Amino acid sequence: KIILKVKGYKGIPDFRALTDGEKATMRAGHKKTTVDHILREPTESERAKFKRNASKVSFIRGAKRPRTKIGADLRAYVEMYDQLVTDVEGGTVRDKGFADSERGVFLAAIDPTWKRLIVQTLMAALEASLLD
Image 1: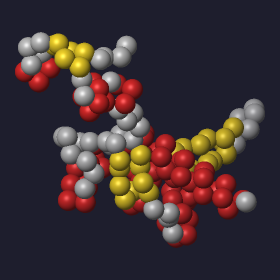
Image 2: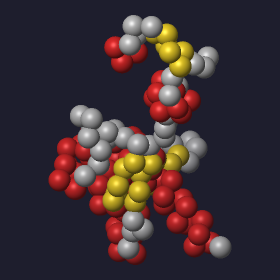
Image 3: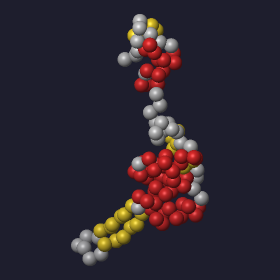
Image 4: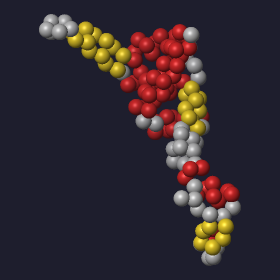
């Protein structure tokens, strides 16, 4: 539904046409709905350390069928994200955007599962680019 006229907006008691700026403010379709995480590329040593710590694979012997146990260390993903992130666009914490002065507060507010997903996406893209 598109809003073209409004009554009582900004203290005006009668109907009037909205300005383009007001239309953009009131229409949900004009609002940004994504949060962009900007990360630097990890160094080779950071990638190697992450690969060692991110997951553990063990094979369980003695069972009727061979079984594999895979464990993912969420802490490794969180630490990697926190090291690599340089900016976050489209997200706020306490109505403030990402800033180096509030970096710790901002990073603590981001859900660790989101951090894991972002690092997984980054690492998959880097692996794919190495294969090309």
